Amino acid sequence: MPFSIDPIYILILAGFVGFEIIKKVTPTLHTPLMSATNAISGISLVGSLVAAGSDHLTGQVLGFVAVTAATINVVGGFMITERMLKMFRKREKKS
Image 1 (spheres, one colour):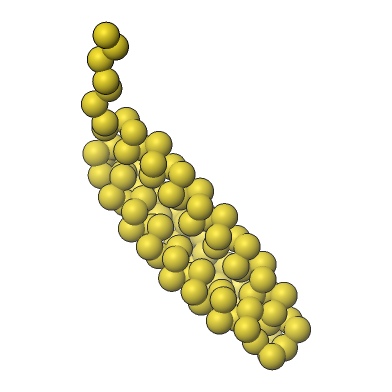
Image 2: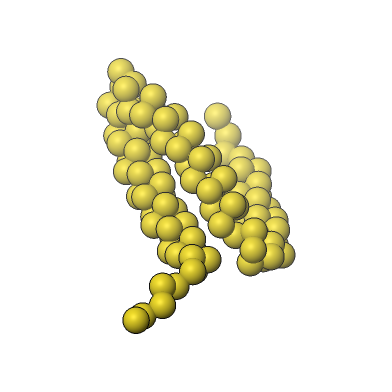
C-alpha cells in the first residue's frame, strides 16, 4: 500500500479550522462547549476500550494507549469544567 499524505493534510486542516472556531466562541459558551467535548471524549473512551479488547497484540497496545489518553482527557476536561463553573457561583459573604 503506497504512502498517502492526504491524512496529514486533513489533520492539519482540521486543527486549523477547530482552532479558528473555538477562538470565536464567546466566554459565556465555553462551559457548555467543554461539557460537549467531554461527552465526545467519553465516546472515544468507549471506542478505545473496544480496541483494547482486540485479539491482536498491536490492537491491545494501541487500545491501551488510547484508553489512557482518553481517560486523561475526560478527567482533565471535568476538572477544567468544574473550575469554570466555580467562577459563576455566588461567593458567600464573610460575617
